Image (tube, one colour):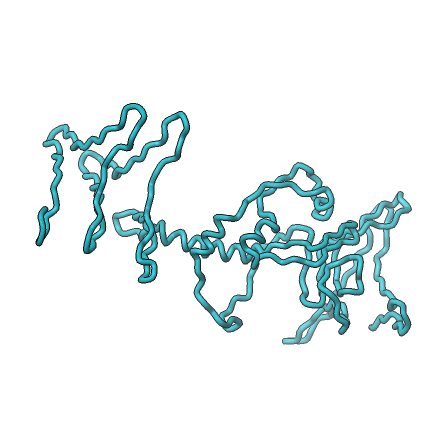
Length: 339
């Protein structure tokens, strides 16, 4: 069965084809069902929805006001009242659009899916290189995370009835200053049904941003690492700066300090090993410089004060049943010079 509308060779649109089920004032409307016949063994069955494209070229645009600029297949709903003479109000939820340089699916409603899979086979990729993850970490820290609501017109597009809804996310124009590679700017975004149009509309590639977040996390874990669990021992933690190459000559410093206060008391710093029961032994605390041709010094000192300056106290532990710990200060020895 073939249903074909008339072809226009003049300056007019081609004929339309409409398939509509019956309406009802009190019951459900009729159902439209597109269904293929049963195929033979090993054969396929298909339902194709095709919008034929033109060879003519146009500028990059997603506009509901200039239909001749692109092709589209739309899915949505008509809202109509049986007691009103007004025409149905159409609300498009999903659109498959093709412009001069791309084809994409545009949705104004949430997707509820169980799995999203992306093509990532190595055979479809070339020029594979390592990523400078430290740069990603620096830029991730510059992203401004915002809380905001939506404009009335955008809530109509999204179908959001609650005017007080608040969400967290990024502002595309702000993100463009940090990650321009994750920003796509449409010349125009227009939706005829909702009577809105935006010029130079900014969009965010959040999937690409998640990939860079993985790189930033990897750069962070190079400084803050957790060791592997061993039999009878929990994971260890190591905090370290990256090693220096021959060109850099010096590795970064590590600093631990509490925050500054104007009139109160700043926080303290506690460096101690974990406690054990009465039959166990706590771990040692070691402070030492790295081995080198000329090692650095270790300083324990209180800072200057307007009033009373703090003291430096070195004391050994107290024992309930045995001998208390000793306090010892040893100077280093030298094979060629004085200790």
